[in-house]
Image (cartoon, rainbow, N blue to C red; front, side):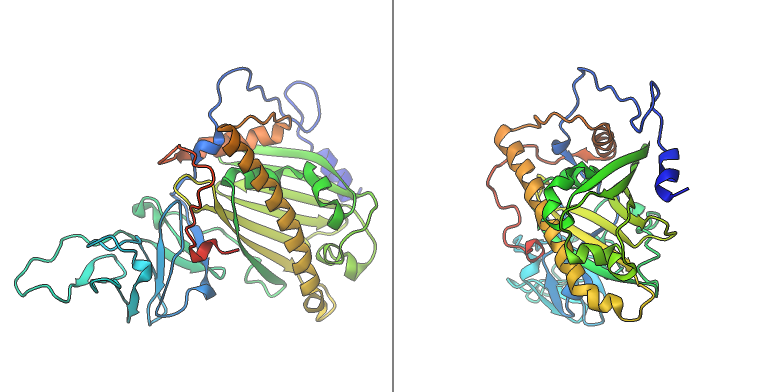
Length: 389
């Protein structure tokens, strides 16, 4: 029995009838517009690639409106609210001295915990302001800087994503960091709904995705597809990524996509293989207060083929392929966001039960936005470094 046949045996049967679609009836009841939901801040979110945050420098990263990073002389990264408590001038314009961040305006100095350590001109005996600025828990892992923007008491008990393949000697990781001008929910829908492969026909050839089934829970949706090649020209990088360029031939892949709130993963297992040819982990981090722009961080962990050096040779081809696919996806989801902006609401008519399911998960785990006023045409990134593609 092939992996494809085994996958078909795992198809989830509907409560009424058969097939991979569990029954789902939203009926005519009012359902809140998902694009007006904010992402839950009580998780660890990547806000920068570690190598981008240099020692003794600030980095204007963003999470839903504001954030600043700076790396002290000793190498530790700190995250502070991006405003001086004195005149509200952005601290991202400041200067790092040792482990302290000094405002560029009146030289007020802040420790990594946000407290004021010095006001140079404060007279002796004068009372120093009791409060500085908010500091956020920070951790570095997987080559990324993670910040916990929610309740700081939850940071210690909330785990980072578990990515065992990242440090494995059998894998090599490709890192992605790109701005996409859309609500983060469009990104989850794009990756989870593999029926859009027509969009990628120029790089993937013709693909027939077959939904084998999906599971759901309060904070996740996982779908399994069988990708069957149906002719057409495929980008060289696509073949190398799925190991066809090494092993030869073209066979179906089993693709597993999972939204495990708030992250998303994808694994591709070639037919008759036991381990994934590659695994993708992605996080979509809102940039502006209205969360109409996200910064996508991705880690693509690729299994090394048995031929020494083969992956090194294939690397630039794989990179080009993934960039082309991402560019096409970004074009589509940004078009969806523009339509929402123009209409002032979500008027799309979704027919795929899987997407209705993931929308429910994102709504249930999200939080109300600080502002629900859509300002079409605004540039929420304001030229921030983290918003640079």
